Image 1 (cartoon, rainbow, N blue to C red):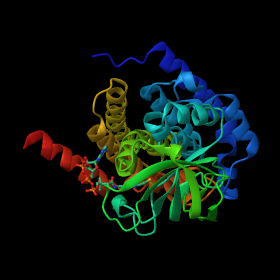
Image 2 (image 1 turned 30 degrees about the vertical axis):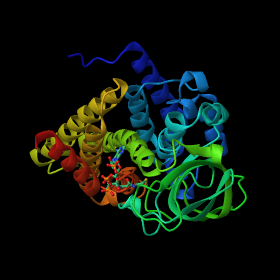
Image 3 (image 1 turned 180 degrees about the vertical axis):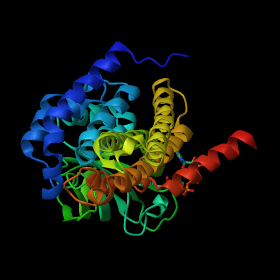
Length: 381
Ligand code: COS
């Protein structure tokens, strides 16, 4: 067994780490306060190829493998989890369904534009369909050589900026997962409206919106996979997306650990630095150990995906372990900072808010446990 990264993986990670430290971290607090990110940062990330990170080279991407992608996501999340999620949604659930299930014509039409920086989003969740994704009610009615979409999607990351939306909808009058279909829908489609922007607890640099469809006509060529594949395409996309969220959570958790250690090294109480006091040392040891264990799971899931083997179970385990470990790390980091950790002057206050959603989106921790238990049931019964 070899735990070393390849030269290419190290090079990619270091390049993004350098960019994140210089271009993202210095404005992370400001982006959080202003609830947005500057256009010139997006332009710089576009020029650096970040929007094509996980895209195949033949469609204009950098063709990074999943391990490299994960390492890069961790670096971005350490600097700003909000910037990170904009890129992870674009590079995974927003584009993967097109890369994996689009026709060759659709791939040629959309992937190079996405890789060049036209942003992608993923529309599955609805007011009545969150954890129970198959309960979605947005309809796709066949109309000659097109489909007409009607319904409302919520919690759409990148909604304000996206040029393309992957949308899952169902045949009118049906229930369950079988009559669902996935489409790639360009933003300029008449009848598609981007609605309310959510005022969120964390990830405030990224935008999350409602997207409404009212008689939105999509050519049949925009169908991804075959009719009836919608739910399975969404699930497959989420399997990969969850690896990205695992690394995002790790990035936030590592930022908490680093800040906590630095603070504990200089903050003195009872005549010596906090770091030298066993009660604080124990907290820091637990943070480091839990994050390192979660990283191994995330790397294993990424490696399985790169090896072309099944990875759904490990992706769910990685997301569960990383988001829960990072959440505990954020709580400890605030605790170690004491009252200062409760103030915006210290970045752990932002990390504590940002990490919370990693236990919720792309499948709650409860749904990850459900997925894992089903896999284990199949493994051992
Ligand atoms: N990849 C491909 N196909 C999958 C799959 C996956 N990861 N998971 C399930 N499927 C298939 C199943 O094989 C089944 O197919 P058949 O009918 O041909 O046997 C079908 O999809 C239905 O699967 P299942 O019965 O497991 O569906 P459930 O309704 O029980 O739901 C959960 C499964 C709960 C796991 C799913 O709804 C889920 O992941 N929910 C969370 C949604 C989520 O993450 N939302 C966040 C969106 S981004 S903010």
